[in-house]
Length: 440
Ligand code: NAD
Image (tube, rainbow, N blue to C red; front, side, top):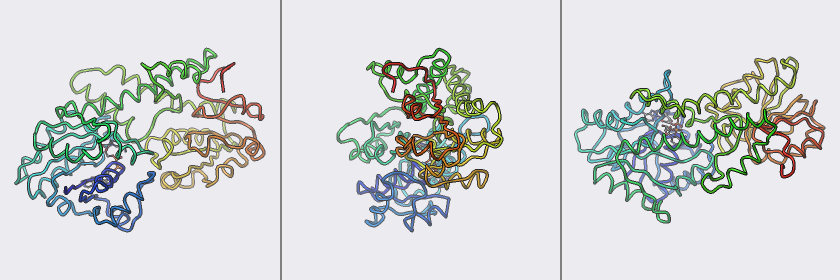
């Protein structure tokens, strides 16, 4: 099958590589010429485990190509995926200008029947608008389908190749049959292909992200209560998560959620509710709790040092919004860094893959160290923000010998308070009370 992907970012590149790996003929298009030039030379624009191998293999086999020319990508394609960004507009609603622009370009370039598949996360009703745009310009028959993407950054290739489910929103039989055929190799073992109407499909993506974000904010809210009551959120988490009706996932208290999806998708969902006169009270609260939570780590550091960080050097471990990615969009670490700088601290940060991305944003306002131990050298406190594997079991003895003051802020409750305190550190976690028997 000939496939064209418009937008070669986290979603478009992974999808393009994944579809080509199943034997399809895929062209990935992007307006960013430097990205496309890099990809032609084998340079990945993002860090995603396993992606470089998948791309290199399929390029070598001639199944995956890259271009800035949408018309050449669209020519002859039966499936055209729209995977461009849908960033938040000033009022929180999704900015659909990239999607609509891409739809116009595709409409002008169609050479025969095709299904336009919206992979980007878009508000309910966007499919109708895309259909209207294309209808005005296209000289060929076409269909518009919704096919939201559920991959998670840091494990995107695995998620794409082995999806929990594939949601298809379309009422055009040819479009549904085409997408069923396209996804059949990915759903052989699970057979979880869910076909529904386009509006339900569009809303499904917001509903899934909203539920996941709700669990996180719920736990962060409880963690703050734990601190006031002397309870330990880690014990509470295990106690509630072992109930099969609840399950253990997405119940970790932390520095608030970030990334390119949850914050913007929640704001967009709230805005969609507003448009139709409905107040999504729970999602409003989820957003508010998260905004507050993103300040918590910084507040703890500033409070420890009596309200000012003048002359203090703070080490920060982890800049990406989560492990396994170099994505720092809306990352809690960036909020923390700004708080620390505003309170007068000098900041030294490390991250296994996201440092170059942050260097472009913050330049020399902070220092950067490749090694996490070098980063901790001479620090008055160390704050762990992203739970990369290499940060999970450090030598506390070594850290103590390197740091100026033995103070640890564990933004992910990764370390054992008992062990860390026994090693001579002051320890601050998120929502960790006394713990007692059973606490790690
Ligand atoms: P991204 O910013 O990484 O990539 C988008 C790309 O589209 C950019 O490279 C941009 O240059 C390109 N682009 C914009 N307009 C274009 C045009 N007219 N023609 C060709 N290329 C164009 O974005 P992303 O993270 O891949 O997200 C894309 C969409 O998928 C968003 O709606 C997002 O919400 C959704 N989504 C993202 C994830 C994720 O984990 N990143 C997961 C599921 C869904």
